[in-house]
Image (tube, rainbow, N blue to C red):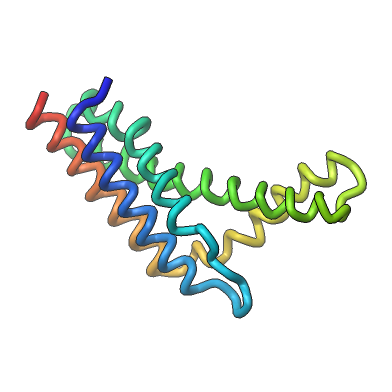
Length: 148
């Protein structure tokens, strides 16, 4: 059921994911294209904000609890986006015949996720994710209390 908290959470975390993806794209190695990173990240951010943070905003006893859930939502966005792009990359490689067995391709997803992970450790990306998670959680909590 749509609520104000879910709507505010979806908008807030779509923004957080898009801004974090932008800073992530700036730190990519030379020659690596960002492609649809920002758009996919914003879509995943909106979905995670709606499902995870929006649902938890009503159950949060305090703003601090909601902010903690906001950080969890940010981390969930990162994991989901990394897995999506790792799978897409592995599927492209599999179509070119680079994997001998399906197990090699499955292991390739985890290997590719590890290749995508280092730019996440940049301070600007971490700062956007953590601060955005805190603010997004507080905004969703406020909307849930305001229009309950």
